[in-house]
Length: 434
Image (cartoon, rainbow, N blue to C red; front, side, top):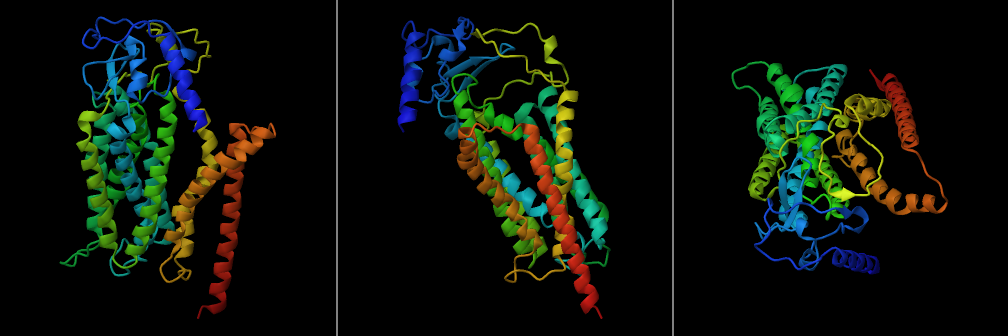
């Protein structure tokens, strides 16, 4: 409380220093105001009240819409207006659709392998072997985690923008994919065999493309609802809430869908369809409240070529952090070893669990995958609140590459344990098989 009060007092002091005159409503228009040069350290970064707004320099204030009184002109000359409390004005619509999307993704991802091999319905399934099902799911996950490049390109290089790309991902791909997947669980009444072509369309194209397109844009779109200068400190809080929503959705989907699937797979897969339909409706309901910057179209360009840019802030001596796509790709290669191990959670580990007894009669291998989400919630809190502060006091700092290496090593231990479990399964089978 004291820290927040001191921060507010400092911001108000800085605001007074750069407010030469009271704001006169109705006299300011985007065309009549040219941004003044303001030192970056003296710009408040947590403006969210009317008291703070009254102290802002005129170039940050808009009188066009009382609900969006903050003003910003971006590098391309776009005039954008923002709410004082974007979290409750527009962002919660975005957080809700992301929570529901993660509910759907993890609920289905954790149950796919068992569904394909006939664990949930021995009489109606794709009749895939364990290896075939694992490959099927692995391809699906690969598409889901590479299609964000498609979403990013659509959002940045077409007229769709972030908002249109999210809608396209939900309505054009995700919902049709869930619909097709749900219908494949319904046994044919005229004796026709299981429709593997429809399954492939839903699971290997529509659904993973939908989740990838939405995943690539939704978090950035939420951050764009905040003024990039006078609300920059609030963006950090937004990302904390964003990842909390991700894990809450994943946890709920990971718990409910696997349990329901054990009793009726059609109902289990109908729930994600209904949930995402509701999420899309909620997202549409907030349409008029979103800040929607026009696409810049420079995703595949090296920003060093953009030499003509407006300068709102002076004395900014930060180094050049421009990165090309190739540079980003090289960094992403660090993730490959870890993801090889991580992808086994929804494939190999599930298959191993199908030959084991369920804990408490309902907790199967798919349900146990929720340990992933729980560990993120717990370790995210513990590392940020306990471990990092302690390391800071000891003047110990881990490089990002060292963290990647540690995570990859833990993945190696998980695979080693999986091999041991597999050995024990085969030993048990050989001992008791008739």
